[in-house]
Length: 132
Image 1: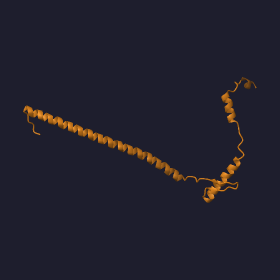
Image 2: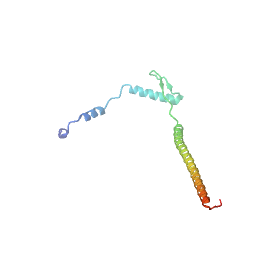
Image 3: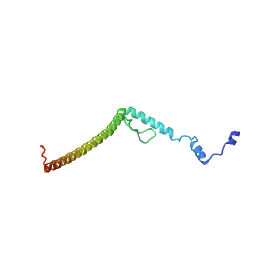
């Protein structure tokens, strides 16, 4: 009793938390739902069909479980798509860099040729004639 007296009164948050965490009985329809789900799964495994008219009435569809190989194949396809896209972008970037380097090289060769031609012309004007 002494511990209860020493405890601080619960705050609003703690009260809301305690209320939210209290045990609640399952709904009355849960047992029927679980029985129908088990019946539908058994029917799907026996017949291969996902559609079932349970004894309780109505219609239930249980989708087929994905095949393990299909999940792996999908994962592999996604991985290849991501890697392929990355490789394609890298190749495109490299091609762009090569084209830019070729343009720069061509411009440098042209500038060098012009400078050499001007130097030759200046040498010829001064009387020096170098063999080309």
